[in-house]
Image (cartoon, rainbow, N blue to C red; front, side, top):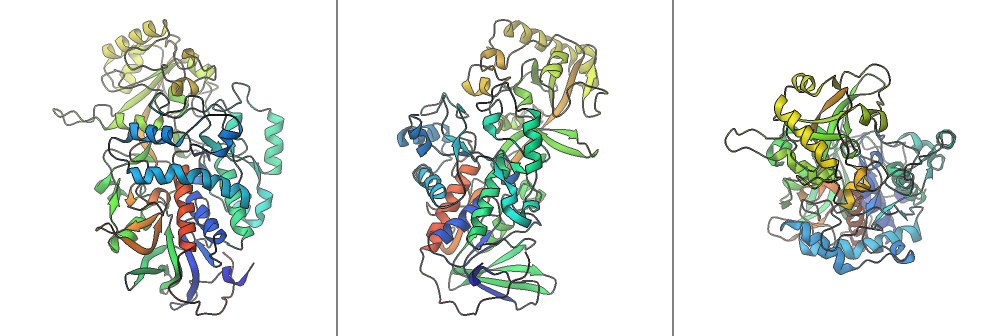
Length: 568
């Protein structure tokens, strides 16, 4: 490791000081992309600080895909795409919430980012085959895939002692890639148990683990070793320029300075109830992100006058509460479960209220419908209901109908009894199920159009026909589980320009300060373009931030000798 990136014990004394070129706060995909890019474009001394005691943030807990239109893998496979189509697609979803300059920067920089990482780092990508956009029939949308990419499997032995310091999901499998599931080329075949067992033995990981593993390896290759357990509490400003970061320590505040810039990549504020109450547009009951996402980067930027944008929005996802193998209640995203045949969702009136197979982010809006008369949210509580045929074929969470029904799942022999058990309108519910069964006999849903979009059938049972998501509810017993509004993270924060430079309330650049990922005002506005629509912008603007910071003239020459290393 070179001297410039040796660790310093910031807790050693109140006046301890670290001088570097670029400071990155956070360690998810946005942060690590920013750190690697900063070093790659000339910043010799880059420091990454992480509040948690593990690295990877929510990125490591995710599916690990990135959504990048016009990427070079599409051209190599003869898949058509264009800048105009990508921008037309985002514009069709904007509702005047997407800033055109940021959309253009994203579409233009994305392919460059992918190519640069593949040329200079262990971070490699491949197309998740046939994965359509989340609104594929919109103008410029892709029905055939190509825009969603993922990393191949990655051996975690290559991380040394860091292999056990990466955040983990309690839902996502660690040893598969999306291309091996029904969402990619895997169709309904699955993966042989002996193959999975060998991968577990070899600690070969996919999805978000592979993405973060490769990014972390890229950092370590460049002598950038994250410093975990360091919470930033403030930004140092000198003559109007951000020049450093204050960290909390046992003996008071300590400061690290950066001659070229500070990059905020600290995630959203979904675990901060006060900020949620102040900004988010509707109920958000179940965050599924890492619990250290409490808005630190947001509040630091607010204190120095950063302009804010998109603060009402989140990356929405429907969630149920389940009990894991340790007996603990955890949030479980029902991205697959609510799309499977032989299931619907109903509100307290026993009525369907949306296309259950719509993409998870768009579905979040269904929870926010307010009745102006009763002043109640019309679709809360909501229930996913299904029959024994569903449970036997698809299962829910990790329950496949074997043994005792778990306590988080309500069951009854008849629809009327199920309605009573979950306290919804019985006659309305039975009428809804009867209407559903009559409609799906014709493989159509005239009420909400379920099964008409390529997105709907892609997320279904793997057959990718209308029957992939449509099926009768007619085999008792019947089951129900409450579905709650959750979020992968919030998506509002400091406004930025195309270089990810933070803007002040007057629209001017705050010199020395950048933001990327869920801490920034998302370039995606209220929408979610496709699989990887969170991590794609995060990595693109992280890359842009790192590159711009590295090529910015330093505020001063290095003033201190190399600093002694301690463990992270």
